[in-house]
Length: 326
Image (cartoon, rainbow, N blue to C red; front, side):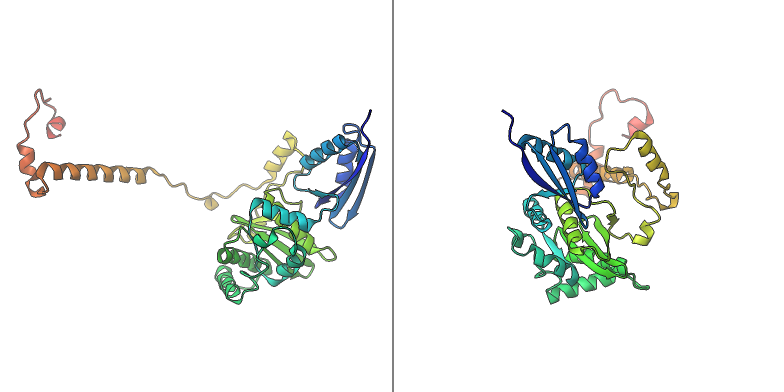
């Protein structure tokens, strides 16, 4: 007797509706999917599937591998609940570098299970006057002289907030003429996404946090900047962008060929470790020789030449001058 069919709604974020529909249609015969429906809500895509329970589980697993990080939940899951769950499960601490990010995250994360132990709700960061003063001072030192650049200033603020709060991740957001810049900083750098006007920056910020906590790839369009790199300079050397699916050998070679070569002057100099190793070895030998001299002379190093002259000569000493000296 065949198992009764069930319906299940899968939730994607940062994945185009056409891509979700195409991937699900390709699994229709393999997973015995009786019904496939998709609906887009801004950057979120809902996929409704009807199939036997085992086929639904198989299709969900295949779609999760097809869109790593894109499939965030099912049924009544929300992006805020899944972001809080990722922070709690991975034991990651989240703080906010500015009040806009706090206003976007706090109302949505409030009340989520276990989030109080992973999100400070501004108590130790931007809502604390003492911590905020330290964050602003660190950001000014990072910004340096010159005209103000909103994106660079925000990156410096995120980096300073990491040092002040000792959090694993720090969220930030600033308004831009064409939308909102959302950012999440980790230990190595920051993920940035420019949310266009009319889209929901809170959802994008939650998705950045969720993927960062889980260690998943970020959504297409999200850029990564190492700490200390200005975005304007990083734009001259764009990161290698590959399609979501496994690229062919020709596509991979084309992507690598399109990447500009690094200037020799920009390369870091290679420092040999042999001088340091040799110095350490000589230091050890000197210490051993000094210890032997103390033992032979009983602590009186001035008597060392007399003690050496009184040592008996070994038999059959070779006539080589170097051997005689030794």
